[in-house]
Image (cartoon, rainbow, N blue to C red; front, side, top):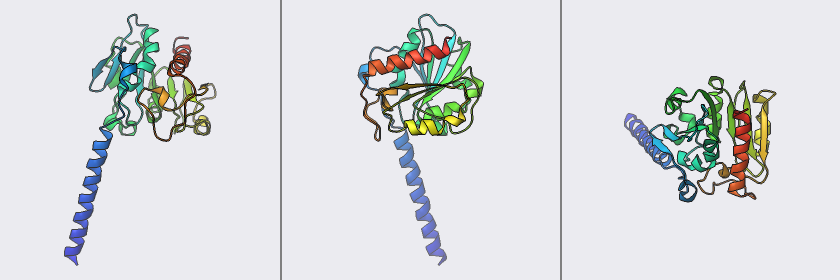
Length: 229
């Protein structure tokens, strides 16, 4: 009987190890940035993230946390309008490409752009959920197709899309009570979840009825109105 129990425990241990290895391999192969939108974007790639530096910095910066299993570079083109307006953008590369596993302090990402005077934090999807936990350390929180899972204070901007099949309008509304009463909400008509980046079609998402260019313009306008006021 003891021998059988030992064999069962060994099989369980092997199965758990195999599952863990499979998960790590899967997590370390994220959805990659589409080559077209990224081709005209200048960025510097560091182990902790991607940095986009404006030609004429305003001293304002945004730490943007990538969504689950999405390559940081996939957000560069959509955020380039902020850089053109003088905002330094650091797109964080979460641990194992999953923001729920991110344990490092925000200062790790802020240190990639030491000349920034005022920081905002934000993120897409699961990256936004993690950004909520950093909110109190910054000048404001920006949610990109995301929502908080616990109460936050301070300045908050929520940007969502009507055709988002993952962070649906219903989910955004259900979690709105975690945000302060003066939180700002911008809803992009016709946009979907994957349009916050450029990494292709995402399973479970809704169908977009707005161009990527128009979507990016609306995101840029909303963020600039929030950060540069």
